[in-house]
Image (cartoon, rainbow, N blue to C red; front, side, top):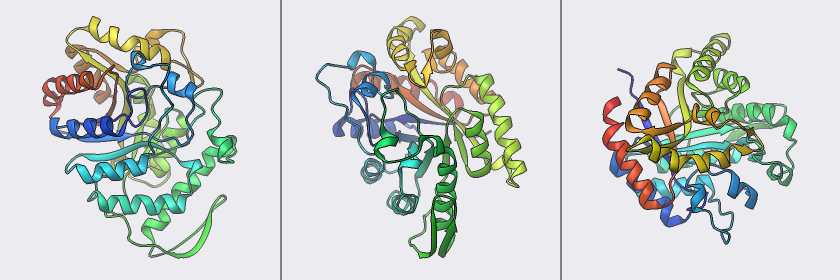
Length: 340
């Protein structure tokens, strides 16, 4: 039986973010038997995005006096690597065009050693998230070129990880005879989780990735994307069976469907009105996430597994840290054993 794994997004941003809450969520996840913990990545983060792009916490936890805190992904994972022993450590996903790929390759190799080979490196184009977002402008990145930049940077990082004396000549980055050690503990490098729910992202995974991790896709849309990933891998001369499938989902689990909807709908409505996902029909969002009673959740997980998914990154919606722990505990008691 294929191993099904479940990971939890810890609050490195959102209305409940703090160093103490990040640590609490990470330790709780490891204690309860989750397979992984995840952070996400942005450097520039506005007050508008803080209120409308909630990836951990809940709409009800927002207050007028909160600042748009967003703890940096790689340094946060480094700390979590030191205080955990078993869980894998993921970032979903690094906004690759805003990074120096040579430096990022060095960071990832170092973190892979500090975590004893537990790093899962998500990579993606990034998006504006809201109309007022200016992250790409701050970094001087041409928004229209972020796709080819991401492809080029991924190839450059792989060259550094795989070559003793690394050289690379691409359209956006070039270097020659770069002797950079240590190489990652995981060889040939930490698994690259490619983010994005478009056909372009599926094809990028087929060419360059190890895992595909889209967000806003239904089970049937996911199944279609899996076909694209595998066809692209074959065309690129890669083994499609070595590429795994994951999903990133807003999640609420409760004892009743009504309680789950009461918790989840305000935040889903908020996150459905961002620049990239203007969703008028709330059912569209509910069809693409995991919100409901234990039986509802179990059925939805089964639907995604039937579509080819083996990894779940859960972005739980919770108005307090005690509620987060309660949902994680219910998931650990009822869902993880059902797919072990």
